[in-house]
Length: 236
Image (cartoon, rainbow, N blue to C red; front, side):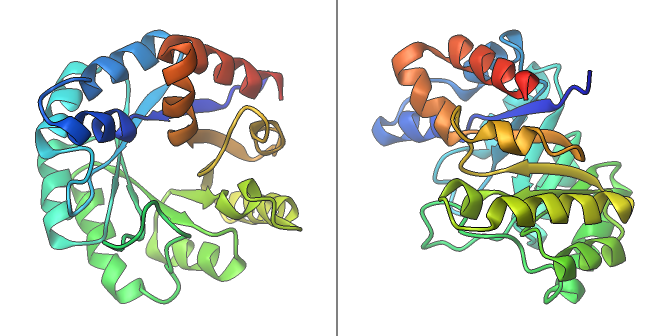
């Protein structure tokens, strides 16, 4: 049976902590609980404004969690330096705007190759596996190939919002990316109700899910929701 890896994004544990200050709830505790419940890795986005995960969270999670750590990051010199110092298993370059509530779309790799090339090179020199968070568009996939990254993560936000034709775009994008030699990941807006169709795409090797799991954990507990999402992915 094909097994898809589940990366759990624990950013919004930090969002809850930061709403009041202090140290509770601790993102490290959430990361450990997620891995114990069946997560294959932990994803966290160190934003430039530090609105949720902070630098010390990255350091503690990197030191305290045995599972692979996937650092989502903007393509900036500051974030490159942080990633090279922390040396997570992987780094996913994402678009980032200070005004956005959450990531609003995929990275324009095709239009930013000159900016992205030194960031990609710097991460790879540090032994960090690089991925690009992109829309499932042929020109973005081609740009990822030119940049020499081994992985793309396809943005599933438009699909999750119910836009017509987006599942077909994801299927076509995943097939093209895999045929181009890229490993295919996917994520954004995935829930119990919509994850199955994405998990059923043959080329998808990993799903990264955060906001839904953290929200549902308030009602059902984090271990329970990770186990249920793991079962939903496996069933697909």
